[in-house]
Image (cartoon, rainbow, N blue to C red; front, side):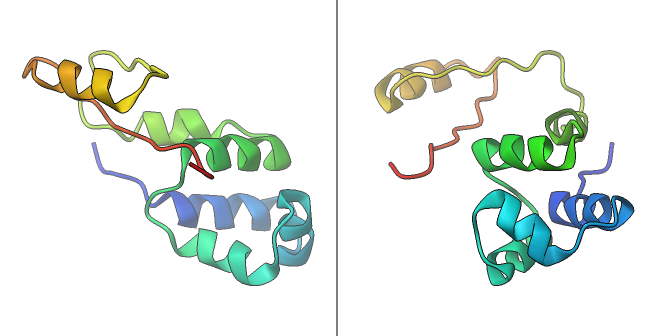
Length: 103
């Protein structure tokens, strides 16, 4: 399965909805420069992706999740870094560590 360029998909969804970049940025409480930077990203923070999904009224999290090669199971866990390191010692699973913005 080919990995998606999430920024391109976001830009495409903005265009499909006839939304201007200025309106998109305003809805995300950022400026146009930041909105354009989102369109260039290969990866987007989960919290930001959830916010963008709400603004565009589409499930971008599922689109991105479905781009993960051969996912047997995807589990989102909120925990501290020490626990994540303990879990990573098990080679039978893969953990994607996503730091919350502002921390």
